Length: 140
Image (cartoon, rainbow, N blue to C red; front, side):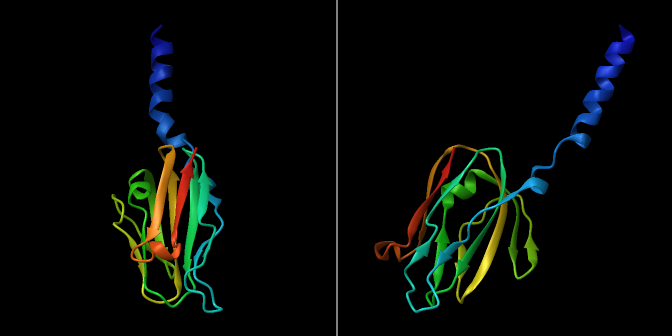
């Protein structure tokens, strides 16, 4: 009986160390693209993105237009676990979600995360919603 209890204690201690690191098995999502190089600053490529709760992902948000894009996805950001935010191969790590992501010029920001809570989470480009700069993240 003592041997069995000792064995269970050893397994319990080893559990976290041998647990799967979700961030190593992430799925690359299609780029969410704002604007294009042909001069249409208000088109969106991949405006609605589907995900599964409990899985790790990498999403590149790419600004190609010449507008200032303030990307808000407040509820989505609150319901995912951020591994990192990457801008020009520089990584940002933190314990909380950002308020928004801002593009003053064309470029890209990649976010690596684990989706946590199922639901539909809208995103928008502040001030450009009436021009169609909206979409949603659908977490199943």
